[in-house]
Length: 448
Image (cartoon, rainbow, N blue to C red):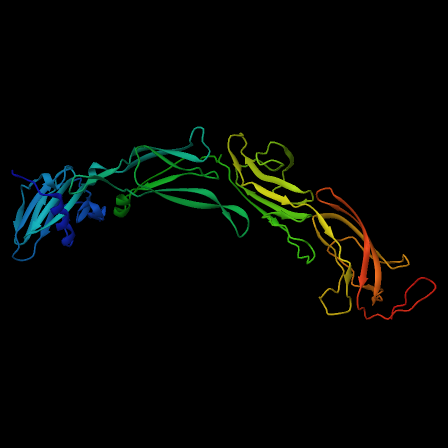
């Protein structure tokens, strides 16, 4: 037989110009399966044939066209040889499929078609038994050992390049998935597609106790005779946690803002929440003054709690969860809570009873004040009002009525988040009050 040497560029050019002519198969217990291969292979089609008995391949040409039939092996089309034993009946050409996997070049007139035929009998998926274990020394990977054969199925391009035909086996098992809606983990089924395996399949470790079921491959599945094996239950050891930190916001118009993702002007209330998976027996929130957690000064074992931050500086918080053996841990991101230094400024004038919302309430301007006490007096030393929240203020009234214009006095004692103590006293000038003044020997002002 004469060896035909054809330039690879010619093979590819011809392949792109031709439509995919169909082959037909007879003599097999199950229909041949047409598979789309890699686009760079130059093949018109790949066929997987359940050929445990002699199978005949047929090609029907258009009327008046002549057909030549060649075969090639893993070396590619450049080493194609004439196919022997081709029978002709009218426009139909047929050959018997050999036992090995093989490539064909069928040229109709001047147009070649390229095929690779997989004899599935050479690659039968045999899944006898599977066993699931955790990877030694690892917490995030599990190993599925397969007894049987699911080796890769190879096919070859027209230039002899080896490619793999995916078996698309299905590996099904349960794990846990976090739900944003209810803030918990729940069981969910996972199905992974396995191309092939030389004996061990590695997957992400499940987060709950589960069995693994391996089924397939896709060819046996399509023929309705898929192989299936289920492992014994694997006890979950992997740990996962989902955490959140939510700060309570204040809308005080006289509180000075501090730019911080978490924190700002003290006191700051932050709610920490965590959800953990089944194997997490140990868990705690850790508080430290250093980003490396060299000094963990507080530990909280509750999953959910609210912490009030009243000291200036940065606190580092993380969540840690571990399994019973103390071998697998999950660490959250580190949350940084920054509390700014304190400040307290007092205005000296306001105009109650004027335009609403325009300088009509006397308020301090502050940030990071954690303790506060303010008393306001008239010029005879009588207390007009008092309050202990820096966000509050004085509306210029006593007993629900505006006091007269004039000078009043404040005395403030406060403590900042940075430990700074404030002892302030000063005057408050009421300007353009609508109240009418009058005198009295008792030292009290008349309010109308």
